[in-house]
Amino acid sequence: MALHILIDGYNLIRQSPALSAKEYISTQEGRDALLELLAQYKKIKSHKITVVFDAAYGNSFAENKTRERGITIIFSRKGELADDVIKRIAAKERERAIVVTSDQDIVSFALRYGAATIDSREFEARLSMASYAAVKGDDAQGEERGWSKTTKKKGPARRPPKHRRKSRQKIGKL
Image 1 (spheres, helix red, strand yellow):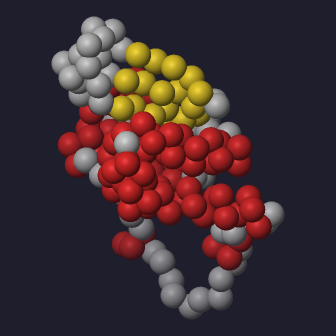
Image 2: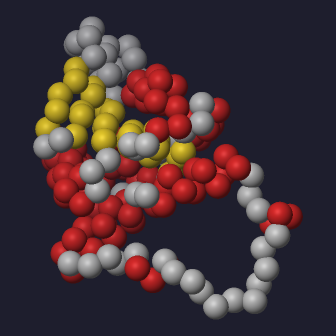
């Protein structure tokens, strides 16, 4: 199953100290910095990535959709929020979608439709970890794999619900 990463663009930029500093200079520079990070990530992981930005106060009555470096970029149409676009795509993609946002309204909507969610700051950490692994030339997450010596037993009472296990499994692929 191919994953589709849906990103609330301005939410991720404003949650990240590095990206928000670039956005402080200019909004376009903040978007470009985010797209550069995502392009590097896309080289490592070949997931489908869509970034949605607000253009609710723009002039266009149609949704503006472009593709740059393998990443789909969507600007919402006039009068529509990026949240609505993300919800629409998450409802369509369902289990294939991973929604990146810190907005709890979008998170609860996505979970209702079976999509996994990840907080913007956590996703930024995964972005930097993936780029570090690419520069280093090996898998930086290698210590998480394999058998670990432990006597702690996990039985059904400690097992998370099925939807949470599936969500954790999808996020692990990031």
